[in-house]
Amino acid sequence: MNIQLSDHFNYKRLFRFTLPSIFMMVFTSIYSIVDGIFTSNFAGKEAFAGINLIMPGIMLFSGLGFMIGSGGSALVARFLGEKNQKRANEIFSFLIFSFFIFFIFISFSSIIFFSVFIFFDTKHFLEFFILVSIKVWRRYIKYIFFY
Image (cartoon, rainbow, N blue to C red; front, side, top):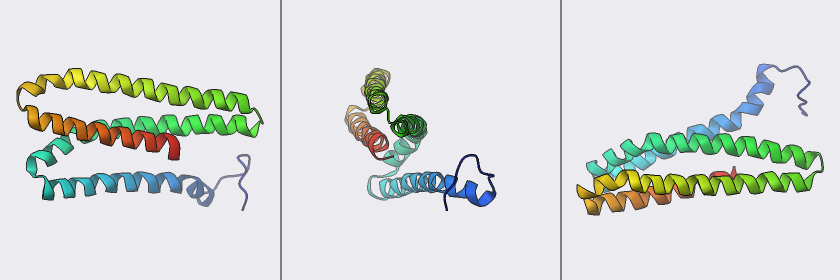
């Protein structure tokens, strides 16, 4: 069944377009739940509280990654469909460069912002910050290249 955007949309066709995005968001949420279960069982209640404190920020950045990744891939696909390989490469390169600059800025501003908490509990803060930073970078690299 070939779907054209000029065709009349019904609920079945709409579901066919939106179902992959719905599944992706459900599995992303399940990932957060499973992460919380393992953290609370193996690392303790303080680590679980830390995950719950940082998770809204991670979801915010995930939403930004989904948004820019979806829009950027649509632009790249448009220009590839028009056989304009040079413009598609320029847009893709700009997206990758923008992501790296943005997340380097976020990383350094987070270090400055959270440096206040180092005075309270240095050992746990640094472990937590390193783990969260690795997790955030891994997720965004995945969204950039595999979404």
